[in-house]
Amino acid sequence: MHQSEEILALNKVSKRFPGVLALDNVSFSLRKGEAHALCGENGAGKSTLMKVMSGVYQADEGELVYKGKVCSFSCSVDAEAAGIAIIHQELNLIPHLSVAENIFLSREPVRGIFIDRKKMRADAQALLDRLKLRIDPRQLVKNLSCAQQQMVEIAKALSLKTEVLIMDEPTSSLTESETGQLFDIINELKRNGVSVVYISHRLEEMQHIIDRVTVLRDGKFVCTDDFSATTLDAIVANMVGRTLDEKFPERVSQPTGDVLLRVTDLHRKDVFGPLSFDLRRGEILGFSGLMGAGRTEVARAIFGADPLTGGAIHLGDAAISIGSPIDAIGHGIAYLSEDRKSHGLAVRMSVAANLTLTNVSALANRFGFIDFAKEEAVARQYIAALGIKTPNSRQIARNLSGGNQQKIVISKWLYRESKIIFFDEPTRGIDVGAKFAIYQLLDKLASEGIGVVLITSELPEIMGMTDRVAVFHEGRISGIVNTRESSQEEIMHLASGRIASPTLGQAAVPQTES
Image (cartoon, rainbow, N blue to C red; front, side, top):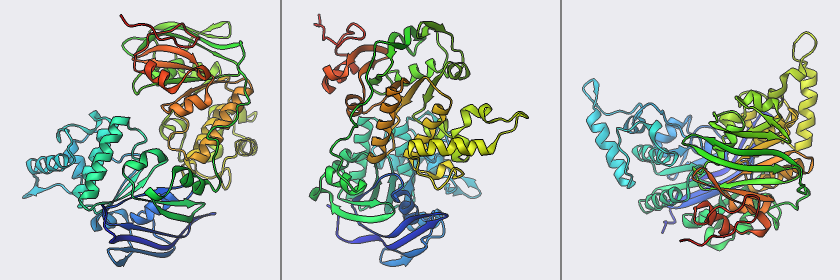
């Protein structure tokens, strides 16, 4: 159990950026040995508050009290030296260096003028042992799983003698078992007196580790509660300023018998297939399955990002050949990657430039130059149509919230007049309010005749938003079921390979095992 001693406090902190009041008179306190969740919609001020704590930003007003003293960190290095470390959602490791080299980067133990590699490996091993991790400190980081890399980041933080550890969406790329391992480590850190600030949109998982929860909304402090004394519904209501009785919108789109896309015996050697499915006009088709089951790989192959070994792809009745993403785009097929920052957005470019990136030729004047007035008009059209929250179209994309970034990526493909769109984990890292808006958008697209494929690891999302679901297991489709005639349990059985393949397009029927 955590002590009541306060280790860090922010008192009436405000932070401004051009055109934005990111934090407005916010107070926050952290006790020694507690895990304190920081919740709020995208754009609520969580990241800004986190960066003020860790020295990345300096507050314009208010004060930071650490260990009973008013402090001002000029940079993150100052905060780290004081014992405050942050693990960002985008991990900050160098892939071509070893685990030990990453942990002690720029702080390597030396013997004389040379790096003492033996001591560095031994110290790294001691930190990994403390976290009960079976990772060789000599191993290159690029060869580790996402979860293992996250653990290396924690080991790195501990090497700094960290007393306050800030974690930003730490489970967003982890499997269920990896998440469990992370929670074991967080609970161990708490027992050793380390305080954890935990930022996550996955509210349901917090019960395993969280002591208190603070909610921000629109840059303002809403409340702090003991986690045991509140409910997830109450937290959500505080986050969005309203109750969310319905997590999913009432569907407008209606499936038809008109087949937009037909895939037959598609396969890629040693990766997936052969597999077949079709996508009908007006429906949202789900791709479900466990991590590594082949859902993303199939979408990427249809989009031309990865090579195919064989199989046929039909748009309507016409057979098409796709050798590259350019071919796919030419046929009206779009793919929204789960990693929108790396593969979906040019984060340093403006909203307007991102919106028009896939169809720049449509903006060109007769001399071949971009008509910026036309670009602005297009940008305004999609900002209004999709409700993108941005001060203006010239705002840099990286400065917007995750939900708004996702809307930019969707707008980009709509401007290209895509006929079929694969959405790969479209709500990952997005708050509950923004999720609802994305769901409404998917339904609207389906109702307008655009083919929508939703790839998601969230079973409630599958049940709430799809008409049919293709369930993947070890690179094959183990069944295609009508969502309303199925259940989460049945889909999990199919995903784990415990039910044999039913007739495609029909509800899955369990087969008797011999």
